[in-house]
Picture 1: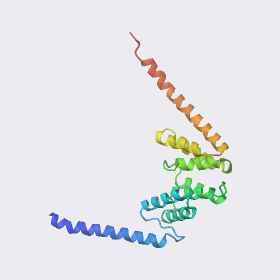
Picture 2: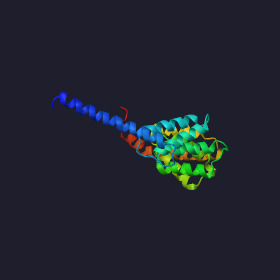
Picture 3: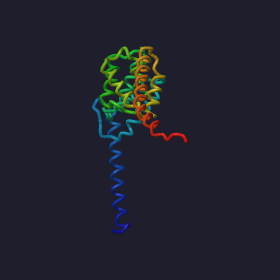
Length: 203
């Protein structure tokens, strides 16, 4: 098949793809304010709304909430959007309302472990440690333990520890981090012992 034969076909496929994408964004514009979620649109659009919400949490809470709701209208499984709503809920009174706790729980339901959420979600939980159920405690501890073996994600746990302001939460996280450090040392000890035994002696 010659290039001159393929070219019109390729242009036709590209045109269809562009038309489909345009239609998807038109549907998003019509439904994003609706209570009926739309879940088939491009997920990068939800990431844009999530980023807008995160940047507006303190400066413009109304805008942050609107952006989060738009993200959830597109993808109800957007764990970051649920987390942003929980973070917003905690802002005015310094405590999580039942609605905020529910948003946090939905964030874990949608993504029990997400490296991109660790710093913000772990710090939120430990900031409100005494207000939350043992189930959420366990979910967060599991998230911290899963992150610990990976350097970048472990750094996010350290960042969460610095962000947390609740004395009770900071103590709980510090104890967990201490236990993880000890476990890491115990796990390394047999390997270090074997290395010492096999190390050639000096002449």
